[in-house]
Every structure is written in structure tokens, then in C-alpha cells.
Amino acid sequence: SAVISQKPSRDICQRGTSLTIQCQVDSQVTMMFWYRQQPGQSLTLIATANQGSEATYESGFVIDKFPISRPNLTFSTLTVSNMSPEDSSIYLCSVEQGDSYGYTFGSGTRLTVV
Amino acid sequence: AQSVSQHNHHVILSEAASLELGCNYSYGGTVNLFWYVQYPGQHLQLLLKYFSGDPLVKGIKGFEAEFIKSKFSFNLRKPSVQWSDTAEYFCAVNTAGGADGLTFGKGTHLIIQP
Image (cartoon, rainbow over all chains, first blue to last red; front, top):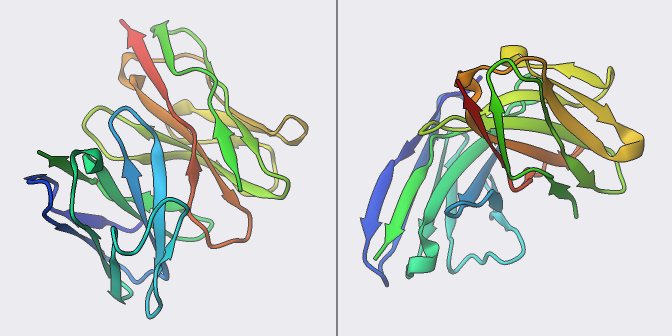
């Protein structure tokens, strides 16, 4: 299965600032997904990113707050903008690899907003 | 939209006990079903998945799950658990044939006592 590298692995940020999270995959993939895992909660899909098109956001998530870039088939970024303590979560990227592997997840970025 | 319900949020078992974790989904169409495991401090790993065919699916580490369409269920089982099975377990679903991300259940925190 694909290997996904996420950077940074963790960060502590001041409220009102923005953080960009990078997701690098070791193979070309069509679909990339971004999830949020709030403390003690399950994973919630933020958006789906296809190369060459705008990301598709799930209900409750907007582009102004979580802008996403997908410049090529192996890379994507998620920015958490104008952060507040409620944005403290683990953010994960994921790729879909067809029937053989299903969905693979990165190790996540643990974000704390103070 | 799909939803996933995991009945047991915390389960405590002794080593060698049998395990069954419940998962029900809500969706009117055909779905793909997944179980993921998250060991302490590690990222999500795929345990097993069901796309079609034999409803009894065998996964890694001795886990299996049975898809019962009439009950909208996909329960996870293991005949004899080990201390190393202590982890968070997530059931997830997406639309069969689609290109969408996963909808996760709230997770079950499993603790195995030696």
C-alpha cells in the first residue's frame, strides 16, 4: 500500500494564526481526503481533493476556513485558518487505492491552539 | 447520507476471551464496509474490508467480520483476544462504486487485561 508522510507531526499555535499541513504520497493517487479527529472523538471527513479541481467540502466545513491545494497527484496541503482553541484536533490525510487496499491514512498532525 | 453506529464505546476483556464489536450502518444503497484499528500512539490501520462476495471477511491478526445485509450490520469478531489487541476500533462505510471518503463510527475503546 501507499506510504503517506504528513508534516508537521504536531504543532502548538496561537489563536488567530494559520497552519498549513502537508501530505506527501509515494505513489500517484487520484483521490486524497482530509479528516479531523477531535479529542476523544471519531474521524470526520473535511473534504475530498482531486488534482486539477477545487476540493469538495463536507457539510460544516468551508473553503475559507480550510483551504486545500492539490497541485499534483502525489501532494496536497490543508490550511487551518484563523485558528481558535476549538480547532485543536488531529488532522489526517488519506488516499484511496482501489479494492486491494482500500483507504490508507497518514500518521496525522496533532494541532493544539492556545 | 450514511451514518455508522458502534454500540460499545468501552469494552474491557481478559486475555483469551472472545470479542464481538457491534457496527450498524444506515444507508439505502450498496456500501463498502471497513474496520480500522488505532493502537496507542499509532496511526489508523486497516483490519479488514468488505466490498462484495462472501459476507464473512477475514482480516489481519485473526480478526473477522460478517456482513449481514438484512440487519445493516458488520460486526467484528475475534475468538481469543490478546493483550496487544488493546486499541481503538473504528467501523467505517462509504458508497459502493463511489469516490467518496469514509463515514466513521464513534469508535470502541478496547482494553485487554492480562
